[in-house]
Image (cartoon, rainbow, N blue to C red):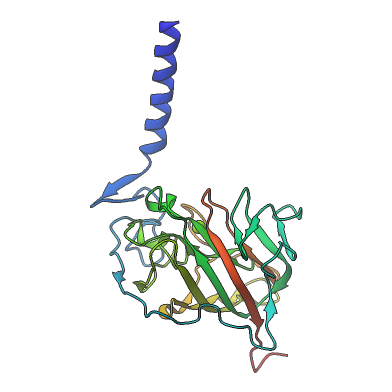
Length: 270
Ligand code: MG
């Protein structure tokens, strides 16, 4: 029995070491330095050496509880998960508590699809804050189901900059860290432009995004390098002109409310 237990501990210990030795901690920031280089050749994907965005304390109120404009598509009714499904198209498994949806079990997406849009969404990070780095209040907003705008609790919680709150995940850190403390409602107001492709599948223009986090600009007409992902070298492949809006379940019960979009149209496009 003792022999079996020793063997068990040894196997578990080895597994943990293997899982962890992929990551490095530099100046208290966990990340990776064995990942692909991002275009420009200065930083690895999820590089802990990349400078931490400065902390900015947002003003007390910006767009919290903003009422949707008349032409908005309201994506959450505050009562149930109507209009949302999991990634297999089954009913969304998230709970609705006190007018907010609570992340649970799996990623979800809207049944409606969008291209260019204006987005308003509010989120609230779990209290008490538990976990650290990417393990604290992780979720995400996925434009067209492919382009993540990171949701994370980075209030007094460092992580690799291209994975922190309002990062274009794995690609571009926010300009500043404008997080409110966990337990307080926060806002994203974003303008997203879908990528364009030529008839023969060449990239004509990338996806662009401008984001205000709690009223502070954190992405300024920033291009996505391609669909986002963990430890990947981003690359565009031709895709449909529209896609769903997605929300991530990343093992944390992050809450969302007041989600609406306004599809927008380029003046020179039909
Ligand atoms: Mg995420």
